[in-house]
Image (cartoon, rainbow, N blue to C red; front, side, top):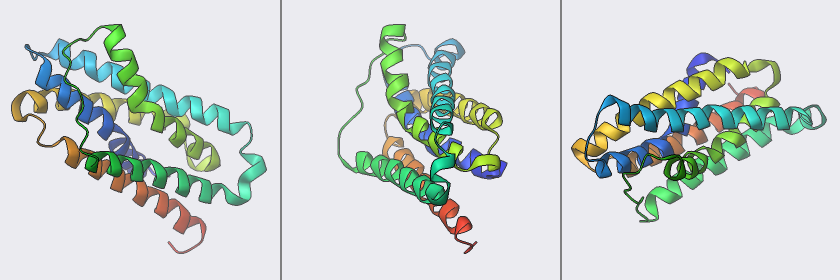
Length: 188
C-alpha cells in the first residue's frame, strides 16, 4: 500500500469517530482546544492502537493463508464499509453526551475503533506492502485531527454532516478493499 492509500484508509476509518465527535460538539457547552484535543486524542489513540493489535494477532497465521489474503482483505474492508453505510441509513442517532471522563470516552473510543482492528488484520496479510508503524501513525493522527474538527463542526453545524461522513467512510473502505483485490488479481 502506498501512503495515499493509507491516508484514504485513515480517513475512511475515522468517519465513525468523526460522527461521534460531532455529537460531542453538539453537547459540549465550551468548545476549546483542550476539549477538542481530549476527544481527538481518545479517538486517535485507539484508532492507532487497534490496527496494531489486529496486525500482530494476524501476523501469527498470515503465512498459512497467503493464497487467499487478498480475498480476506477485500471481504473485511467491504464488510466494515458496508456496515458503516448501513448504520448511516439505519436512522439511529448518536447520543449527545458532554462528558469527557475516562468512563465516558473509553467505551466510545473502543466502539469506534473495533473496525480498525480488522484493518490491522488486512495489513498483516499484505505482508511487506505495509509499514505498520507508519500506517498506525497516519491512522491515529488523521483520526485525531478529524475528531477535533468534528467537535467544532458539531458545535457550529449540528448533526448535518454526520451521516454523510459515515457513508463516505464506508465507500472509501469498500473501494480500497476492491483495489487490493484487483491489484492482486493483476487487473490494476
